Structure formats: structure tokens, C-alpha cells
Amino acid sequence: MKEWLQAVWYRAESPPCWLKPLEALFRRLSASKRDQYLSGRKPVFRAPVPVIIVGNIAVGGTGKTPVVLWLIETLKAAGYKPGVISRGYGAEAPYYPYVVSEQTEPTVGGDEPCMIVRRTGCPLVIDPNRPAAASALLEQFDCDLIISDDGLQHYALARDIELVVVDAKRGLGNGHCLPAGPLREPASRLERVDFVIHNGSSGSDQIAMQLAPSAFVSLDKQQRYSVANWSYTQVHAVAGIGNPQRFFDTLRSLGVQPTEHAFADHHPFQSSDLEFEGNMPVVMTEKDAVKISHFENTENCWYLEVVAQLPESFRTALLHKLETISQNGRK
Image 1 (cartoon, rainbow, N blue to C red):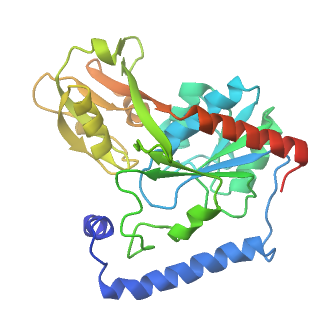
Image 2 (cartoon, rainbow, N blue to C red):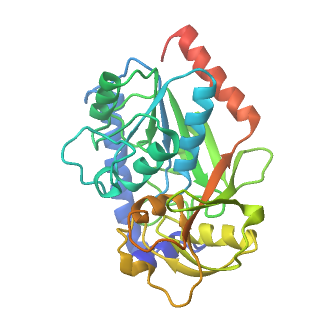
């Protein structure tokens, strides 16, 4: 069913008629939920520091995590002390809110939160309840800004800046909302956000983001090769992300010929998932690597480190908006 829906969502044809009443119901419920918060009928938590939402309106992977990593680096360089909150999809924390540390296992803290903490050292709290996560973050860490990894549709948390990431290749699919299309909210929602980032776009009239591969890193992080010095051409490529094909295509752009092994997003890897014929190295995404690094016999396993590249004009506009919020008060 999932594969069939994916095919319906990303083809030019109109979805089957029987899905449209379900879409209409979804849209009514979604709009009603949002209106309850915006009208004040349901309480909204406003943190004492600015909140930046990094989200999407389409299901599946769009590249939010690289944007979060870019934001952390950019904001730290500008003098801010950011912290991150996340739902922690797939996590089984012993309690919530839960602070993710560099020692936290992905099964406990979630793969993306663990990756963010291990890459940046940034304070991060997971909780499906975003206001509770924000409160815990500020209680336990000296943060003057909160980045919410996902959460565009979680209106119980007030936000000062909304960033939406769109996959430039897949776009908004057929433009319909669930289940007739991939959208969580109507496309018109993009008109009300502050910035729309197009992952993989080269358009000069857009905020275009490119994911630049920087290095192949061994899972124990003891070896690191720049992409220019990587000597292997034939590899087993493993990807348990929202859009595995993007990873495989990236490898090909580097001159690597991958034997593709696609898994579902947030797949709970077992050591048997990496049992392949031949002695070719196994290459994976950094997000998958955090779930695999503790396995035995990973000597020939690597992850591809990528860095988000965004226009200088976007960095300037974002910091200017934050400065304006600081000077003129929050909306």
C-alpha cells in the first residue's frame, strides 16, 4: 500500500476519485486543529527565547537535518547559544523529556537526534510534546535560541521563524493532501512561512540548498578520506532514509558505482542487514551510521559526510530577522 501511494503521489495524473473525500476530511481536521491554537481556544506555549521551526509540508525526507546542522553552526558563529528540540521519531526513551547525549544509543534517543548531538555537541531534548521539550531544554541548558527539528504542524509551540524544506526533485508531488497526495498541509501554507529552502535546486530565484559531500569516514571515526581521495569505485550502498535514491545518486556523482540496498526511513538495522557477498566496502548515510557503529565487524563500513551549502543572502536575511526580533520584540 505504501509503495502504491508513493506512486500515486508523485505522478502527473490525478489521484483516484475515492481518495478525494478522505483528503477533504483530512484537510478539514487539519485546518480545525490549527485554528484551535491560533484562535486561542487551545493553549500555546511561548518560550522566553526565539524559536526557529525547521519543517516540511510533505511526508518523507526532504533534508531537514542538514539544515538543522547548518543552523547550529551558523548561529554559533553569530554568537548565539542554540539548543535543539525534537520528537525523537522511533526513540524509546525511559522518560520524557529526555536529554540526548553523545553516549545515547539511537534506540533510546532516535537516529537523527543522536546524529545531531554527535556532530555538533549541541544541547538536545526529545519529547513528542514540543512545549515540554522546550521547557526542559531551557531549564537544563544555557540556551538563548531554540531550533525545533520538525514540528511545523505542532501549533502548541509558538514560533518566531518558520523554515520549510522542499525536495526540489520531488517537489510537492501531485499537490494533494493526505492520503490523496503527500502534503500534510495545503501548498498555500508555504505563502505564510518565512523561508522556503529548495533542497537540490539550482534556481537563482529560490533559496537553493546543495548537499556537498565532504568525506568518507570510517564508523569508528579513525579514518577519514576526502571525496577526492576515496579510492573505491564498487561499494554496497545502504540507506534507511526518506529518499534513499538521493543518496545513491550522490554516490554516482562522485564516480562511485553502488549496489543499492534501500531500507525504510528510520529502519532498525540488524547486523544481518549488512551481510553482503563480496569484499566491497559498505557505505551508508551518517544518520544510518549512528545506528550501526556499535555492531561487530564494521572495519570495512563507512559513512558519507555531507555539508549543507546555502546562499550567503539567506544567512544574512535570517540573522537580520533574528536581530529585528531582538530589537523590536517578538510577534
